[in-house]
Length: 555
Image (cartoon, rainbow, N blue to C red; front, side):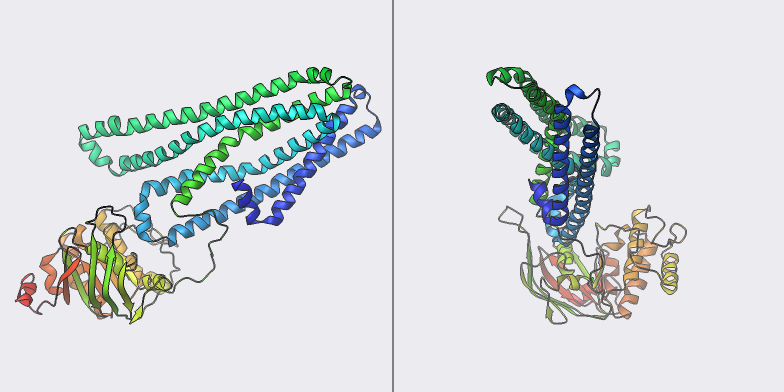
């Protein structure tokens, strides 16, 4: 039913055309079987009228069935594309904190397993509709032949459907368990890949992971999969049992309602044999829709919906600004809402400003709030209190994305994209090549039409390539979260003595989270965090050697 509503909402016209063609196909198929049933005795020497009707009905049945399936398949595949684009849009527009809260395992399970399950259901839905129409029209013919016998048939079939539905309902809880276990498996697969080095270096950990952690999860998946599929196998077998009972009941019912002609008896037998395959296929597809229903519920539990909105591929994007800006935080707070503990971490209240042409270092111990501050400052976390101002204009839900476009950032947990996602003019290409050479990457990375030839580099080299991306974006504000942590002394010197001053000289606002106290004297300001609050905002005394510059300013 949910697939039906989804498709009819997506394109009522196409859906109506497909249903109409399916009805024509069902009626023509049933009429064809009725024609054969009425001429069983003369099939060896068919009359010209019979042959003409046979070919006409057969052509109509096949052509309309093909039309119905093709229209529905076209509708379903287009709907899947729209749905995937819609989920992509929702995921890209979802608050970062929500993404982090759901975790990579749950999201990857949705983007792989759940999308595949719903897609399979949508692609199987067209034939399900055609089979349903054929079954209904065949039973209509049976009622025309003998309504008492057809009514008895319908009662027996209804009993079979009830038994089947009871078994199917019993299996749904196993489908939910399978889906939840899949999230755990995804997390363990990720740990197996990302933590492969650590597992190889510690045999005890490797064995415990394989035997005590992964094996029970795999066993649980096997058990619930067995229970789910065996229950459906039992349900399908019960359906076959009721079909044989129906077939056996033909002579019994014919005697019970005496006077049934041979045409009625053979008509019931022919229709049962003809619809048996349709019914089996119709019923056999039910597990697909059960899995799709569970997948849909899982998707919606993440705050996403199966809407019909389309990602606007040609719509306006928030413009990338280049002019200098001032950022002010006034009483700004961010509170981690997901923590159940009453002593959850709170950032702020913060009162601080950032102006163009300034290099600001953010310092503090682990857990002091530096990374959370970077996410709030860049607009990735939505403040829970206070104000964030851009050139004295408050940042809100309407202009938050536009505000984020002012930043180029390299976070400590950065991701390096291979593509530049922007056409390269000759001048820009030469600029990128100069940066590659300056960052000593030109021997490992070259430029393609789309972007970089490779990102398979060391961590330090990947960070340098991210830095190049920031130069390429040329935004007003540059944010670096421990960028120099993976660099050798040579590049640390280049970063602090050349790159940061050059950016400031170009009117950029530079905010760098760092532990490199030997370079503190190069900052225009140093802001120190403790327990989510700014405890110092000082200006190192010019000309003093680091790290003494900060100490002298405090005195």
